[in-house]
Image (cartoon, rainbow, N blue to C red; front, side, top):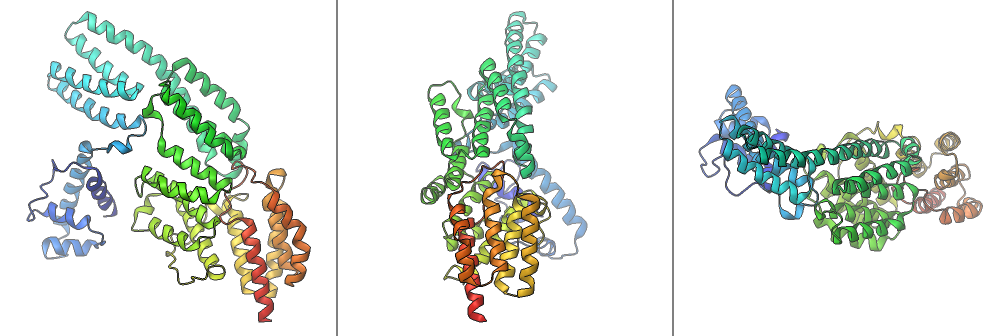
Length: 497
């Protein structure tokens, strides 16, 4: 039923005003009744829907047939969707439009309407040319070539064939670039250890894809190259250079060296907000985050990715009430369930941090916190030098807030072992410094003693830059803020004693 609700929502937001498959004006039709029930904000149970439609919740067979027929119509309706111009940010939009036309042309060929099919192939080709979509150009031209072969039109056949030979060469470069890009991004978005490994290979990968772009002139290849260049800067921690990279890409678009349909404004907004977060320009980041929300379709996968940076900006700015409002929006309805498991776990981690911070930091402790998204975090817990560290820190701080002396000894040993085993090398300096501070708080429970002994360590933490995303995860809450909280917890425990 959730799948049907999501399909109805997509159609409501993007479908034409006239529904070609469902008569939504006839309130007596069962499919119409079901459609209107599913588009309501309220979530009905299967029994409630069956009772509303049939007057009897036991009409199992009839209800199953209705759902099956209804689902097929919703799926078929996807052929008639209207993508708003504001969403046409990449050449991929043209793939949807062209495939729809190519399906129509193929149907005409099957019914021997050869000349009619030629007109539809031309429509698809015009769109493919506008968006510089090599794959769709090839499919449209192959269809035309087949038509001219059937019509024995040698001249037009030869023109199509020669153009296809050139496009096949470009397509070969594009396929190589896409394969290399996909493999690189798979590892880049994986565990921290995988990101660190692929980081050393980035310069050679960028060099290869640059070569493919220069040889083919493909705007699609450039779009991948642009993302990889930014990803490399991100992994290296060179966040201030990201805005410069975006500006250079915009210049190429303005000079018409890159097709504007392949320049993704939403991605540029996303990565600029992320760079401001990582370079600790929080006020500027919050302003841009709010301003750029319009680039994203609410509850889309890209919107959730963008909202992660927005939420982290509010956490880093200590605007916890704002964080709560954003999290409530993120977790509204069942939209979030379409995210992969690792995405759900990250959102649950942010929720847990907010819940903890509001207990001790915010004066507005009545701020509503969304309920648990997931109860266990099995994927994040395996990323030992990444998100698992954030989980450990939160758990230790919670134990510190409880103030049970015997527990603190156990937590101190956990911190010591983790630091010794996982936080090695120059790139782990910030988390290693913070864990040393945390260990000090757990073993020297007198606040004055801890503060005095921690002074130099804390000063060093403050001047230690972020190492780059290849080597660590984003600090859900900055270590400096967590250390302030740890000292506050120690002082509270001293008062209680």
